[in-house]
Picture 1 (cartoon, one colour):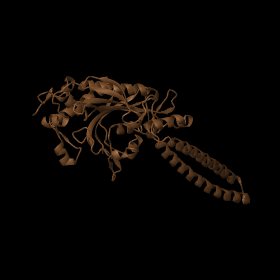
Picture 2 (picture 1 turned 60 degrees about the vertical axis):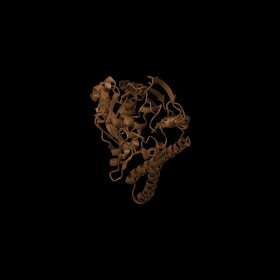
Picture 3 (picture 1 turned 90 degrees about the horizontal axis):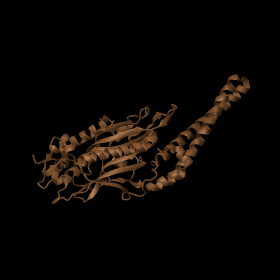
Picture 4 (picture 1 turned 90 degrees about the vertical axis):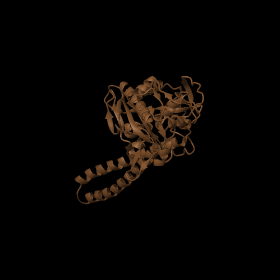
Length: 418
């Protein structure tokens, strides 16, 4: 949730953020009204409770008719307190709903617009000419790395088997990411992939894109689409120690997405699937350190992309394409030769205090006073990277020559038919 102090002091900033996102600025006024109503309800209830307490002391000292009159007044006042308490609860619920309806405040400098309004920040590497280029599905099938047909037979569309060296490729890729993360001070985690509603909602995934999330109704648990979710919940309702600097975690998990609304998009291969594995970086820090941590996360992502040696570009994602929790997001998009376009491989988001405020994650400042922490996340490797690796490193004889650093973790320099 956004900081109510910012809302009260500078509502135009929040309205501008809503417009940058393409969302309703009228929600700002709805929250302002709900905030005023809640505070008024609190004052009314507290005033009546104070009167009730004072009356109780008078009753203790009174006698006879005076006491009876005070008792009658106390009974009437008790009803008023009860009604005021109910109004306060209703006002609290309305304000909470209005608060949660507003996305994080977009950071100054982020482009406005939608999915196609990103700004390219840099290009790294040049796409090379490949004769008779094959797509990753053809390569993966011919090399015995990938079996979509049996994935669909077993589980339905957008499921697959990684087989033989294909499985080793993913394991090697994710192991490389995990080792690089550990070397850079991340604590490696293998988190649960089922989480409670308060954790999924706290990270912002039960808003506009709730239809992307798998829900187990009988258990009221959600399958995560990224280990960002359990890692954000790891310190829920805690005051954490940031005196020595940010806390950095790297979560290795399977991830699940329904891909609702993607009918007809990327139906071939493993670009858009229901299940994949990922190593995700997650950071807790003081708000004033968040921008620097965001750049560090981007740097670690670029280091991973250098290790797989694919051409890519870095984009500054437009406000209308941000998730509700993100104030700023940078994507790294790799060149996919058969599509003649760049496709997302990594995202890193600065969520400022939005998630931590929802999840009640705080730290103590230099005066020992609890303050809301900031959170950030960034992809360090995922299954989709196999697409870019296969297509960019394919050889004329149909094999795939792996870059040296990745090859060490996969256990072979060349992916060839078994």
